[in-house]
Image (cartoon, rainbow, N blue to C red; front, side, top):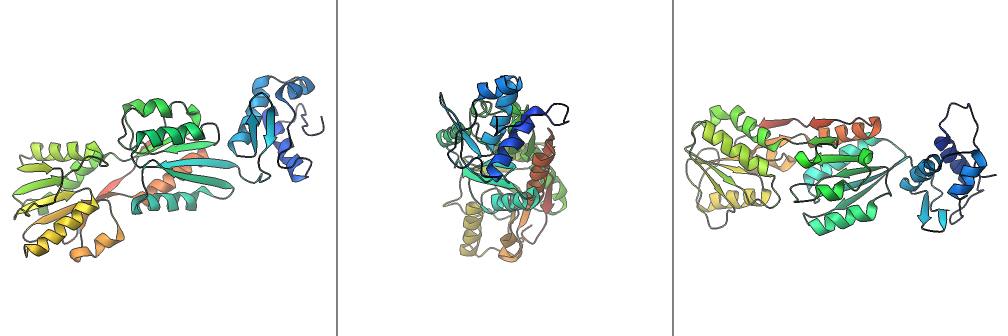
Length: 332
């Protein structure tokens, strides 16, 4: 067999020798795009290998996008780009400045010879399921942001168990997978606790919680804090025709609501930080300058991207809670 060469006692696993042989054949143009590879059975017979060994080698090449399979016919060369050692499926909920920070940090730290394909499910279960089903078996790693979608664990568990990493939000159904996540319940509780000296002057705490995209842990952490410290509080779904409560502090996970509250304050001629307060969720550069500075509770998205890259490169199977901080500015 001219394409594949296997040597005993070489110190290299035989499935890796299969991979290296095919890569070398492509490099030397013995194989070109569209060419058929030797069948699994033929390789098994030629080198006295198990089917599992041959399939392991072919599967690695398939995940990297170098070959593809036609059921009942065999394996064919899909791409002659053999420098790609990792092909990563990255599924985000939506594109915003926070996800952009994670993505850019991940790309910066993942190194060369890695292809990252990014997708968005936009909080739609059907889109989520289709993207995962269509990608299954075509990537070396699957990085999934399930957010608060219901009943998606079953879909995630159809992927190769050792190739999945959960990002940003996790739950009990996904505890078997490595993850880098935010503990929203803990983060908002601790953030409010750290700001208690400034919060003491406010008579009422109001959270604007639409509940569609926002993690439920935010709401639970907020309620737990208010109950533990006997604080008068209210949770509303939206801020549209509301009047701002003088002496109140608004906890605002959604930036659209943040804009609405600031605009309303101008209409009522209220001074932020004096007549009322704001704590926003998730740090952005604009919040440093808007209305002389908006206080935020935020995780470090750049660190999250860096940790994600390290997990991919090292293969570690951990669940890492990304750190959060309260950043105090003039809105409080």
